Every structure is written in structure tokens, then in C-alpha cells.
Image (cartoon, rainbow over all chains, first blue to last red; front, side, top):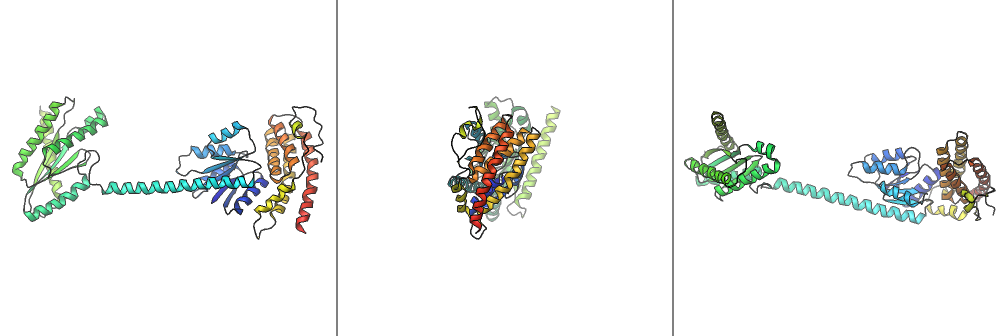
Length: 307
Length: 140
């Protein structure tokens, strides 16, 4: 194990170094606190340090304090060397962040055991960090594989495109028309700004519930992100679109009437029919639905301005 | 086995308790225990420590002398601390005790530090002889 020694007294330093080396450790030697601090902050620095308490410029306790105040993932195991055996001094050292201490002149076997204990902890810490890193990577991978949206339980962007693409292939084979709907919440930003983000999240979840209630369970309902939703309803053509949107609006109305929030849930909706024989892929179809939705949003705004 | 040749008549004096006991100048058992850290193929480790000590201590004594001349208490204290550390490590007990007392006097900015330096130097000549004999024993 690589160990840093900080000791200004040449004889003690040599004794310490020789002992550590005789047990197979690699030793980085420094003779004062600021060199020790620098050496411990370098990349690949030793993870175990034996610091003399009393040193010129920075003393061992100050080195401890500075290391502990840094916001770093790596933490050095610190053994303070002290010839002071008054209790308040030890407490000061431990409060500064030392892990252990050794009184000088140290007993060779005691030094050996304390270094061994430190090395064990350093190894445990690094294997723990390793495990945490592995878990984080696994979690990240799972998130990337996920098909559903955490907030609403609907499909997410990835889930929607995967399923819709497959559904369109089936529609092509069975020559059935489907309806693609793009819905965008009106005024989510105002809710967030005036009622707070929790209210905004609740509004999004409420819209998701209303969509679930309005559509059939064979329809693919997704929250694409933010305030955008998409639905692919197989076996429906544009002639039914009006009826569906009417049902959606009346469910929204019901919600708004039942709860007397000082905001109203509203959606701007664009719908396009997908011809089973069309070669146009789902992303381009989404573009069409998106345009239709924006036309409606623009229309709504114009109406609001007039009234 | 004489203790320090200092006369101590005050019970508050830092040396009052320690010099009541007879303390060896050099505990050779402690010094020779460093043979355990001897690495194979390397030059004699105890010999190296003796040479290091005999070089280092006079240097620290001069530092103390200069600091006393300048009334620089922190430097007196620091150098005395080093003398104590080196000495106690190698089993050079009497010097360790006197240096410890000097360190304490300096911490309290207590005046008679010059006396202690003299007794340190006096003790050092004794230690030098013992260490030289040990060096002799190891080089033949």
C-alpha cells in the first residue's frame, strides 16, 4: 500500500519510513505540512497518511482539517503522530478529522497494527466506492432501457416510438387505418410559475389520468416529455376523431368542474389519420400531428384575444 | 548512573519529577531493536540512524542557541521538540527528558532555557561516546 509520511524530524522520519518499507509498503516522504497537503491532493495520491502533529508551517491537525473540508470522493485515512498525550489534544485531532493516532515514541508492533487497520478500511472504502459506481451505472442503464414515464406511468418517448412503430407495421399488414393524436397542455408554465412545481406535476398527472380514462386500453398513450402527450389509436379513422376529441374535452371539463382549482386543465390537440399503405414513418407522422396541434393552439389564442 | 547535573530546587520545575529517577543515557535495547527493520542487502540500519542522530542533534542545538539569542520562543520549542522526538525514538532517554523540559519551558516562555541547553550539550557528549562505541562495534 502507498503511504504518505509527514515528519519534520529526520530521525523519526527515517525510523517510520524504514518500518513501513520493511512491511512492504511504498512510502512517500514529506518533511512539512504543506508538502504533505500538496502530495495528498495530487491524482493517485496515497490513501493512507501518517502525519506528525507538530510541524513547521502547517501542523498535522491543520492538514487534516484542510483535507476534510475538501469536497472530494476520495478520503484519506489519517493517523496522527503525537507525543502529546493530553486528552483534549487527542480530541482536537480527532475533531479535525484524524481517523487514528499514535503516541511517540511508538511501539513497532502498535504501528504495524494501526497501519494494518487503516489499510483494511481504505480497501473497504475503495471496494464500496467501486460497488456504488457499478450500481449507478446499472441504474443509468435501466433508466435508458425504461419504456415508461416515472411521473405518470404512461409510456415515455422511447416507449411510444418503439410501440407505435411496431403498431404501424401491424396496421400495414392488416390494412387498418389508425389515428395519431398529439396533445399539448395549455398553460402549464403559468401553473408552475404561480402555483409551484408540485402543482405543475399534479396537473400533468391529472392529464395522464384523463387520457387513460378517455382512450381504450389498446391505444398507446404516452407522455413524450414536459407537457407533450401522444396517443396512437389503431383501427380508428379521422371521421371518429371529432367524437374522441369531444370525449376528451368533456372529461377535462368534468375534472375542472369537480375540483374548484383556480386553474383549468386544458389541452390543445392535433389529430392525423395514418393510411396503412403509406410509406411515411412514425416520426414524420408525428410532425404532421404536431402541426395540426399548433394550428389549434393558434386558433385558441386568437379566440381568447377576441373575447 | 547520574541524572542531569542541574540543580533543581523547585517542585514546580519541569525536571523536578523526572530527575528523581535514575535514567540511562542510552537504552541500547531500544536502539538495537531497529535491527528488526533492517532490510536485506541494505547497509546497517542502526548505523545509519546513529549517524543521522549525531548529525542532526548538533544542528538542532545551534538552532536552539540562535533562537535563545533572539528570544524566539516558538523556534526554541520546535527545535527542542525535534530533539525530544529523535532521542526518544532511539532510546536516548536522558536527552529526551531534558529536551522535553526545555520544550515545556519554551512553551511557557519561561526564562532559564539557557541552563537546559548547557545540560543538553553536556549530556550529548556522554551520548556521543556511547553511540560511537556502538558504531565501532558494528563496523568491525
